[in-house]
Length: 66
Image (cartoon, rainbow, N blue to C red; front, side, top):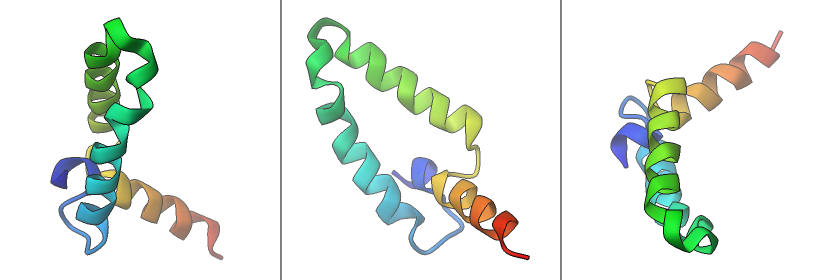
């Protein structure tokens, strides 16, 4: 939860907890491939947002400001 959300922010762990708790429910329709899809989603998050989703969302928001 910490790595997905982001360790260096205040709301990162909350975001990580929300995503980690909702991700298995999202992939419940895949039945046979649920664990594979869950693992692939977690690896993709860690590859494309190495500082966590909160840091990635925060940097996107700061880029839009003048």
